[in-house]
Length: 243
Ligand SMILES: CC(C)(COP(=O)(O)OP(=O)(O)OC[C@H]1O[C@@H](n2cnc3c(N)ncnc32)[C@H](O)[C@@H]1OP(=O)(O)O)[C@@H](O)C(=O)NCCC(=O)NCCS
Image (cartoon, rainbow, N blue to C red):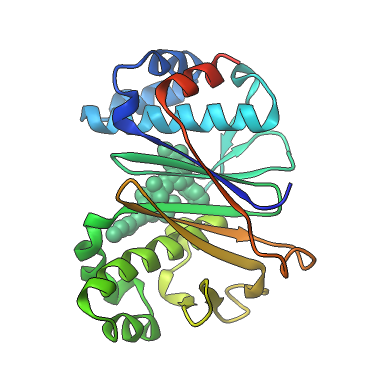
């Protein structure tokens, strides 16, 4: 199956729902400990909903019971399936929105930020954007600049996450160009030997921008990437977790 699936849930829809008890029973001891270490309820909820979306989506895509899913973490903190599968996934979480991207084409990374964080992103522009990216932002009228800054930041994080490196890949070492209808990656070959393999898309969901970066094969590249978006509510997630 080509294209990318983007699943998302709003944390407030799951607060107090039976799905949280269902997912709790699926967690390993380390995950339960990590949950308990969060001080604030909103962070506990964000963590649990992330785990719920992760388990629900993976079990559905792999047609495997959630109790059978085995997840591990890389040294960079990225969750992966313990056993090799022809499926790539990545998660992003904010206080209000949790999203998961699944691709069978190649690697995938996802990032979401609330549009309301535009000013925070602009504040850190000098440390995360390249000179060219900052010039591009500066040329835009203020309203467009705020939206574009969030889009640019989520796109950059989506790429760093698709690479599995997160912030260990310095964001000023690569740039996104917006000349084409969708952005393209520009970087030295030392950073990425084949920048053209990545396709970038952004969707606005629930007052957030959600960006996805997908690796495409040479044969797939001429075909536009299909993006399928699915909203999940508490009842759907609970059903998926009881598979
Ligand atoms: C991975 C990283 C990029 C996470 O960024 P983040 O914005 O905090 O969080 P996101 O919600 O997008 O992603 C978190 C999820 O990404 C996944 N993840 C963690 N490490 C990852 C990695 N190395 N590669 C890919 N995915 C990773 C996990 O699923 C994680 O959630 P979980 O731990 O609950 O499973 C991290 O390297 C980091 O250092 N972030 C700093 C972010 C920052 O400074 N933001 C400023 C915003 S203005």
